[in-house]
Image (cartoon, rainbow over all chains, first blue to last red; front, side, top):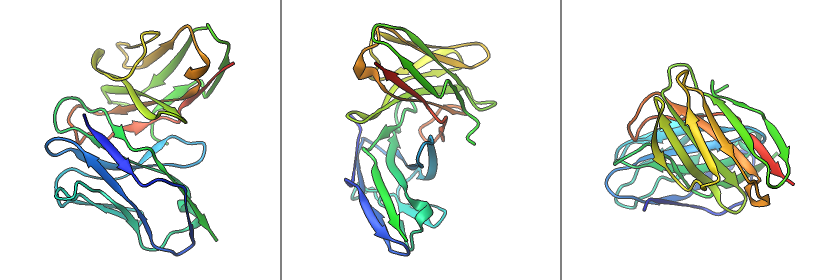
Length: 113
Length: 114
């Protein structure tokens, strides 16, 4: 079946540091890939997505590139802010069948001023 | 605000009881999904409805059931509750079908079974 493996947390960085959260997946064909963010006490919000190989999703300074050859979708941001502190989830939907999301375990990010 | 409304926000109940969680999807969205978020299992897909019909089923226990009504709102019924059912239950909705369809999540219902 489909699965998502993401970098274990928690991750603690200083403000303005460079961020990478690794995500790899297992799925047949060409799944769609997503990063969701969960701020404290809130639901999940879509941060960015990519639906085909070599696509780059970007939003709010975050970027991730769909790499079919390495089955990866790593999240990056050049300069993090305290307001980026949250839990980040990598997820996929299958190219085949229904639209359910398969999530990674989540990575808790804390940014220190 | 995602446009997906879940009620109640918090629920505390005793073991063996039954509860109903309610979800109103975004206007125009035909698909509704239910997910369970727990510390040990992470985010797990439970069930999906599309325009009133069950479209996909995940790791949903037999004690749990769901339905989508003609006005497209959905309810998740949890019965014979156990301590291990304590979790955050999310509803999400999307416009249609297809793997690249974006899902919008509600703020969740936190269920505590005591």
